[in-house]
Amino acid sequence: MKLTARKINIFNLFNLPAAYITGVRTKYIDDESCTVTVKHRWINQNPFRSMFWAVQGMAAELTTGALVMKKIKESDRQISMLVLNNNANFSKKATGRITFRCEDGKLVDEAIARAIETGDGQTVWMSAIGKNSEGIKVSKFNFEWTLKVKKLKDRN
Image (cartoon, rainbow, N blue to C red; front, side):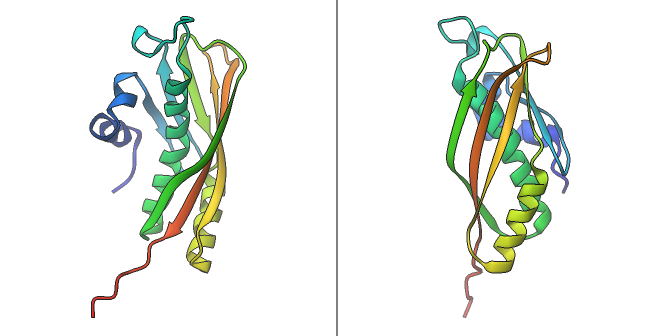
């Protein structure tokens, strides 16, 4: 079964309701990139009438996490994933529709290949840049994902 933007959005409705309610939506995913948008609204604003940083973080994390989920699914292996670290920079007030994009699919491919080859956990830093409708960068988030191949349990 192919992982699509629509399937991710349905998953979020039932498993990440805070992201769904605040308007975080996956728009596009392929082998190299993922695009997620969120529109500034009353439900996701801060007291300064811009988008709350945590809502931006949910959208940014989804761009990276969806790519990791897609690559794990395609590997046909049982691999665990978890955010180990993250950081962010904010350069402009986030109003209107903000589009986050991650283009680190190749980095995930390499980390999964190393995890499968060595059996050791791997980490990969991925970034998501948020831009407003005018194409101006409003924030950049970096996430360090850990990937580890799960050991098969012996059935004897």
